[in-house]
Image (tube, rainbow, N blue to C red; front, side, top):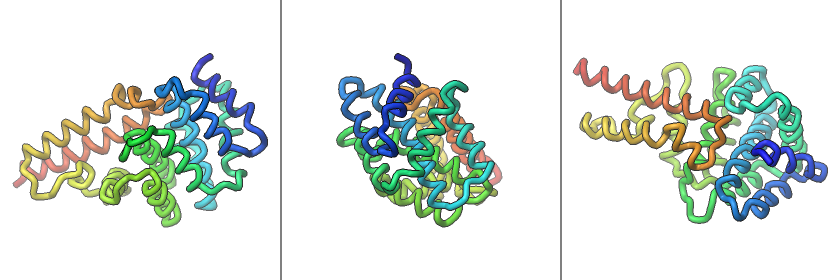
Length: 236
């Protein structure tokens, strides 16, 4: 059974709108295969939480739909099941906080600031900013998800800066360094971030290959921040 067959099987067997029960089933069915469990959990998290974010915002724009498909490249014959899961999440009476807590638990015990949870948050940011602005309700939604994911406030601000629109991002914050840090330190930090966010690393921690557009956009932001700082150093 393929990865997508597994997800399809869960969606097909989901009773009514009991998406929460399906998420719990992921935990138990894949107990002996944590790698596959993370891949399935990641996919379900993106679909369910993006549906809840759209509902919280009140408006689903064509740009947001396009952004969803940019980061979620699925086989054509599976798109109907993805749409079904998206609809289940919007209809389910459970709030987004309940989903976020379940997803956080699927990451693994003791994984504070779990990298996979940051990947989920990154994907949600990508969808939220697709219409050219991160609305206040979307930011509140994302910040609350980050809190449930146990992502520190300063780390959340770093992610937010990475997704800043119209040149508003602080390149030092994107890299997570102080503005007066020595350039050698900045360079070491940049190289470490590039290594940590290489697509191979993301696959190793459970991000399905279908979502590697997240890695590309993240690396583009990291590279742009470093280039901005490097140019400022040369001018100085």
